[in-house]
Length: 103
View (spheres, rainbow, N blue to C red):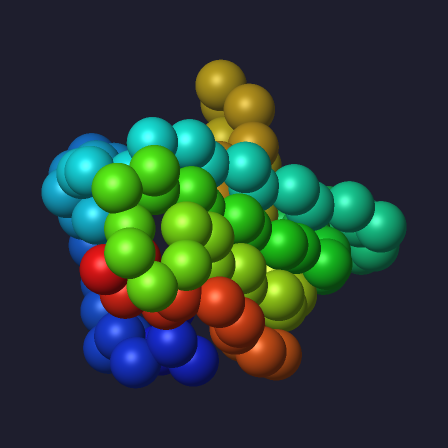
């Protein structure tokens, strides 16, 4: 999420879920869409590209009730005995609009 001001890091899925849970506190509705997946598989690895949008809504916001993020994902997956697992996740923000702080 470094394209949105975050820092690049190595972390766990549980930590990512906790960060997002805290980040969505107070947000009334979230709609994330991804599509137009391009997948390149070679043996036990895969690279995935997708377009993505995210819209967040907060009824109590006074400077606009929505914010929207538009960008792309680059994902890297590795196949293990129990299936495919994401081991790299990058979001590339193209633009953001609306009340970005939902205040």
